[in-house]
Length: 225
Ligand SMILES: Nc1ncnc2c1ncn2[C@@H]1O[C@H](COP(=O)(O)OP(=O)(O)OP(=O)(O)O)[C@@H](O)[C@H]1O
Ligand SMILES: [Mg+2]
Image (cartoon, rainbow, N blue to C red; front, side):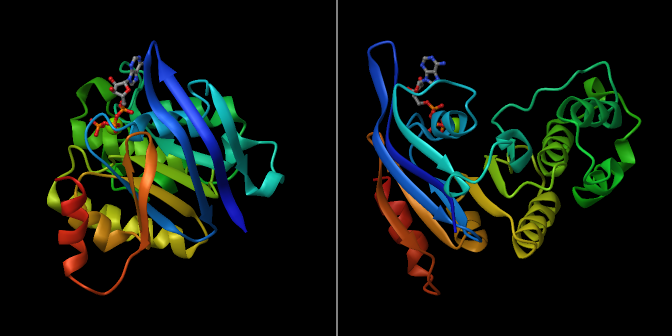
């Protein structure tokens, strides 16, 4: 099944055209690495998929049209995770769960999976960047989403947390979640993803499955040069 299909997507900010007729489709079970230079439009694409910003034209179809509750079926972390700073981590997730009317995953389970359970009673204002990132990922998986969008989720994470995140992504993927993983860490992308796409000049100029060859990282690097 196609989890997402994007056709002819376009988006401008003022007179700057950022997305220029982009096509992309992802099959269920993929872990797709979205790479590209700074300012290429990766975060813009994620926000367009989430309908946080409005597209100029083009089509985005989810689950081959068999879905009307996108917000429950798509989980996401965006670049700068936002929370109510004066509430605790757990309270933030409770609020989110109530807003979406979720009855699925337990908040503690989600916080356990991302290793932030120890700080559940701390106010978010006292969280470090990495702790916020972990909380953001907990929030993203709360609804057991079928599609998970992670925009630079390793930002602010220490090496142990990155390893944990890699395991978590693989675990979620085994349970059937399709993932878009946006990152500048090409070795991470190589390690985690089953395929990648290079976003350049408003379109995906290269799309390839991950292979066993170590030289693939060098090939990915070259795309940036
Ligand atoms: N709300 C906005 N208003 C105006 N311009 C914007 C807006 N959001 C993004 N842009 C512009 O769109 C372009 C793409 O930005 P975007 O954040 O999507 O890039 P990116 O690929 O995520 O980059 P990075 O690797 O640095 O995260 C940039 O030139 C940026 O300045
Ligand atoms: Mg970005």
